[in-house]
Amino acid sequence: MSFHDLVCRPLILPAAVLLAALACGPSVAEPYDPRSIEGDIPTVLDALRSGRPQAALTAIDQLVTAEMAPPGILHYRGLAYADLGNNERALESFLAELALHPGNGRAHGMAADALLGLGRVEEAQAHIDSGRLLATDFPFLVLVAGRAARLQGDAPLARNAYETYLSADTWSPLAAEAHYSLAQLAIEQGDQQSARKHQEQSEHLERIHQYLNRYRQRLAEDPGDTTAALGVAKIFLDLYRSVEQEARFLDQAETGLQRVLDSDPENIAALFDMSFLRMVQERYDEALDGYSAVARLDPLHVGARLNAGMLMRERGRPEEALPLLEQASRLAQDAAPRERALYERARCLEEIQRPLEAAQAYRELLALPPEGSWDAQERLQRLDG
Image 1 (cartoon, helix red, strand yellow):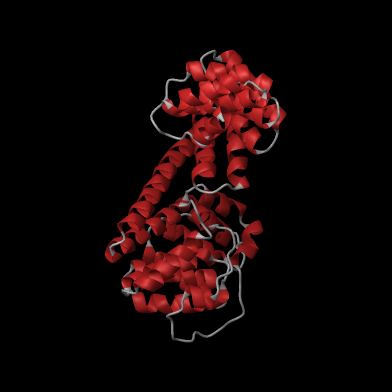
Image 2 (cartoon, rainbow, N blue to C red; image 1 turned 180 degrees about the vertical axis):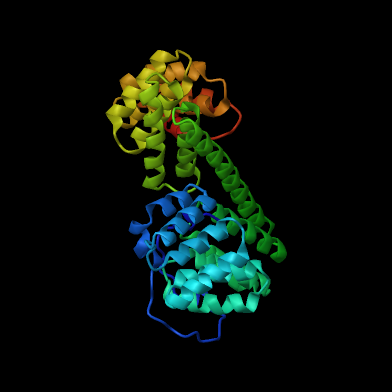
């Protein structure tokens, strides 16, 4: 895992929830947070966050040679070795860090992870016990606890740990691991439905990160690659829609879309996605302006007309929405947008007091193969009545 993957939002984890089955009582030291030195090691952080652990090690060596390395730098040396997959050197660094800062709960968690990688489960468990008391805001420790419980054959504790971890991290590569592990646990319990759900989410997140890493690599090589910038933006919009409706996903998407539009103001895909983003942000006038621009640039664009019509109707402008929805229903080739356009058109006709035409639109919708007719049947019955 990379340093970037470990930076999840804080989560306070009750000990009973996190490691209810642990019986041993670890010694308690004064808590120490290694992030307190991050302002002094920007080069190291940049290398770790961009997936360049060897460059991070070089930067650390330079700081040590210049006698400018702050206390706690061994923690970041351990992170770099962990990113390189060198469990022995990572463990060596984290143990050296713990000799200086016994209260570094994050180092306990990382040492436990390295020990699990070396097959030393009992030793790892001791570090988990200590880490849970010292770093209650470090969700990665919960994932390590799940791995340890899995290796020890404690399925309930492993399941609890993975589910708790996913409450803090919904989308990183580590979240994909948690979903995969939950799928395997569900298979062992004979719960095929749950297994399928977690397996699908794990595969979805893995695909997202494969594409995201590819696009970010392209942008590192060519900052002007608008196709890659658009790809990054679309990934974060997908995360907003399919994983969790978090503002940070929208912020990331907006950065990518603005990057494209600064270079290519008439990029139809970026304009359309930016219009959706503005709609979600409740900046409705900007969203409508964007959809209008897309419709002007592409006379056959169904989505721009459909979304603009839906937005106008919801904003109390059904007469203006109606022609856009009529165009969308005629242009749509796929079932889902055509059904939605017909439904929204029927709603507009109802709202402007044209009940006979509205009823006919609902009948046309209900004659299609059942996909998502919403409340069309009930509305038609009311109109007929």
